[in-house]
Length: 239
Image 1 (cartoon, rainbow, N blue to C red):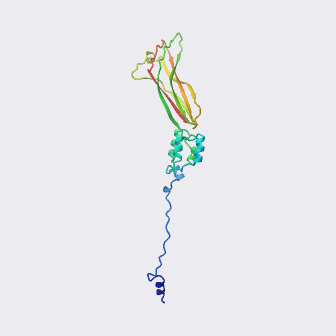
Image 2 (cartoon, rainbow, N blue to C red; image 1 turned 90 degrees about the horizontal axis):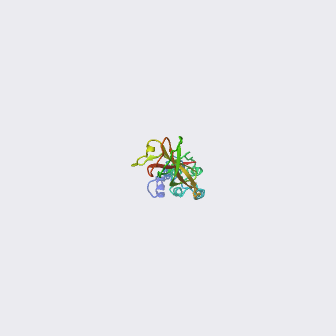
Image 3 (tube, rainbow, N blue to C red; image 1 turned 180 degrees about the vertical axis):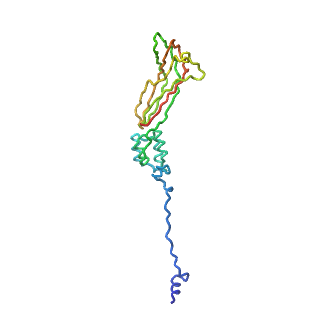
């Protein structure tokens, strides 16, 4: 039997060429296709993987995470660096080492100022304040009935500021004020702190007093209620 006849009978009489299949080519997975990539997440190009339930429970028990932070950090889709920074700024993540764990080694901002609360206060009836025979400054104090309460998250310091008095629109300034013989200021007088809550935060309540300082000659008859406006503002600064 010829060589050709042998191969023809062996392979069915077709072509004598043997088809050898090529191995399948496996394409490497693109970096952007990965669901979680910590290094990309640190560069704001990806997402961090969701945190373990054990870590979340521990941080919650110690008051370092709020329930708002909890929802974001256990999301199966993961979370971003922008989300962690927003939670840090709002106080929903309130402890430095917790921030480091959540961002896999990044440090939080050194100090974050968060505007919290402001209130408009109108003066109560002030006076009369007699000048008397003294030539020095005469001062009188009048309690203000309005107060406000600010919730302070753990790891934040609280500061309260009071603005200068301004004349309410449509009101006429008393003569002693318009001539500069009287200065009215607002200041905090009472500050009480409530018990610590389950998330580590505390409520701070402030009361106010109005100080009337009289200079020069003449008595202060009265400053009617609602003549002057003050703004009290609370600011929180991370420790």
